[in-house]
Amino acid sequence: MTLKKKLVIRKPSEDEIETISRKLAMIYSKPKYNRVKARLMANEMLRLLKPNFSYRVLSELTGIPESVLCRYVRGSIIPSFEQALKILASLSLSVDINSLLHELVEREKSSIIDLSRVLKDPYIIRLLTILLMIELAGNKIDKIVATSFSVLPLATMLGLELNCPIVLVKRRPYPGFQYYSAIVVRTPRETESLYIDRDLLSRRDNVLVLADVVYTGKTLSAVLDMVIRSRAKISKIVVLLALGDAWKNRLLRRFDIQVMSYIEYPL
Image (cartoon, rainbow, N blue to C red; front, side, top):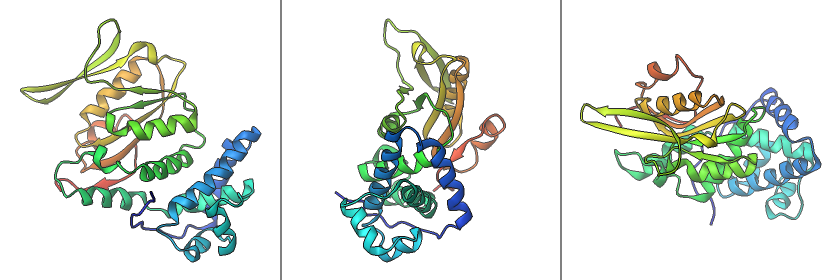
């Protein structure tokens, strides 16, 4: 299997690359295991992107000769730590995630957006994992709160990289457990109940909240309120796809939210 999607790219400036490289160096410089991890991650990112980009384009983006990139992609050698940071910084700044997710949604040709269908390709999930790892550099994260099952595969890969557990927001309670709960009013006749296990979050936790789609912002607002009630600290809130602007008045006054992709709504 290979990643075969048309990706939009741009050429980042040297200052942008240097800024991201410094952030990555702070995360991966120690211990030695992390340095090797960053070097292997650079190889993997090149392999993920190679089906879309020629060696000439990759060379232009990274400043590395095509012959050397070929050996990286084949796995014959791995880059030095400093070279790996430059590769990760250059490529993460070059790939337009907004266009990628937008295209994946359009491929579904449906007015109902289900990211569990959009994110069915494990290579897309792996690419997003690496890009998010770079984006999260410098943030202390102890646990990942996944707001739905559709982001659970991505949350799982992130959890493996960050070495932290995943807390799934549930839609039904189970006997014998205590929960933080919230009710989301959809319509005058329709409500949805949300639950987070009380014993999975505490005031010692620094939390990444990972959401799939935000439209009205009701669900994400309810999840964030439950996290606040647990006294955990919200380190980062990432939304993969925002539909329209209705959610902004409900959320942006209270929270700093990073949106990976935006689509006007209605479609």
